[in-house]
Amino acid sequence: LSPVWSRSWERLVRSSNGVPVLSKRADGTYVRLDGQHRLAAAEMAGLGSDTFMSEVHEGLTLIEEAQLFLRLNGGRSAVRVFDKFKARLVAKEPVAIAIVAVLKSLGLKIVKAQQKHGVCAIKAVEGVYHRGNLERTMAILTDWADGDPEAYETQLVKAMSAFLEEYPNAPTKEIVEKLQDYAPGKVTARLRRTQKTFECSTREAACIALRDIYNERRPKRMHLPPLGRQIEDDMPIAAE
Figure 1 (cartoon, rainbow, N blue to C red):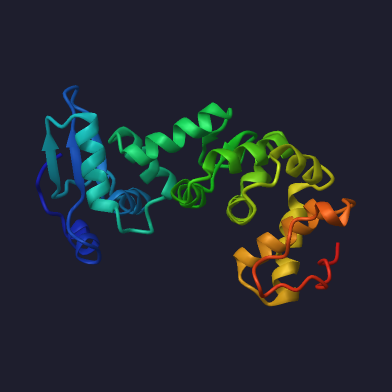
Figure 2 (tube, helix red, strand yellow):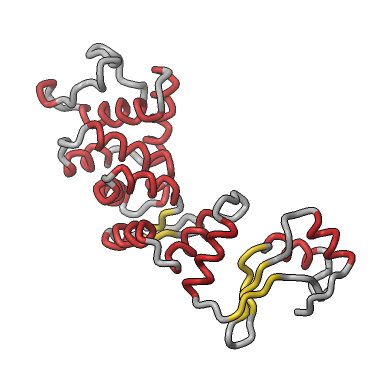
């Protein structure tokens, strides 16, 4: 890598934010920390063999590489959430490590693309972690759907967490048993219909829809109560 500025690279860099940032490791390999998309675009344009100006760091540890990557890319939506999360793990960020520990205890893992027992909804999972009921939320979804990736989509993860926050005393076993009459996709569709029917927030829709599923075919004295003051006892259950 030579610090020579070709005209093609000059145009490419001027159209973005500064030069690519690389880490040179002890074995002579280079790791891209910033400018990944510019480098990929240059390769696609046939400029991959051109010399270019870059910022190169030497002697960084893996943790230091990850920390620098996060500093450079933390606010950029172009960098995949998955890549940022993996960098946070390498950087030994406590929240990321705690989330992985919870998921691992349930036989789950963070993944880039849908697969059984794989979780892609990283932002939703982190939000639930901060809410304080991540383990119970993911345990119920796992017991219900046996690792079906549709059960770990953003809307269902958030919905289950909101429901458990509203009804913390609802027995876990009974929640799972009631849900097993439905595929994850049908519950997601029901959440959307409920929100449209009642013109309420996604949180309210989650609590209403999951409460109605839980209350089905149960004696009225064993029903979960309505959500707050806005939902009346005689409100209809959302259509199947």
